[in-house]
Length: 281
Ligand SMILES: [Zn+2]
Image (cartoon, protein in one colour):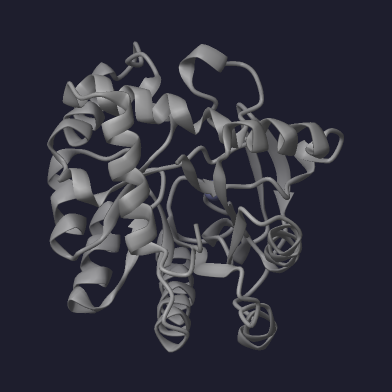
């Protein structure tokens, strides 16, 4: 069984042909965690999850939405709306049995608002992240954690909670040293199609480091994801990413660990069910 632990099937990028995408997902029997990034996308995620048996949802506010800022990347361009963590709003959504996690939430120092200092941004992000952690504990749910260019701050913050936090470091792209800190805390590592990319000419070490993590991480602490519509794996590069492409991440993992595909798929599925205990598959 394939489980995509992080996708955004509710995003606008799927509005025109979501039905076709859902058909392709069903053909491969993929189970999804549709991840919210602010209030409306969290609500849409829950609505989609309520409609389809194999779909589940996560709810929360992504750190880029805490300040208005313009996000412009290879695969996305949008003006980010300012939003806070609205506990009352999420308190209603979390009543759905299809909500399996809180997030995505975390720290993000890559996209920074122009009119704020890093200290100001970090202070706000930490405050909101801690609110998510407490909310997740209160509802006994794991966290879907986003971390970009803030591993030191993230590890320090998480360490202050001890081994009390359940969750996955979504789209992990760090090195082995960073990975070990999260693993020590009992967290899972979520890998996307990024593991299939060739090394960047400007910084080949980054990919070497990432693959080292893929090779060394305990096999029972790995989950896979697409982050679709972003980050299509290498063989689909340039196209919109879709949740069923998660099999490419499993293939890469099998190749790196010199294991059979099926064996890896089964182990990763087991891990996913151990972490996201509300999945009924
Ligand atoms: Zn995401």
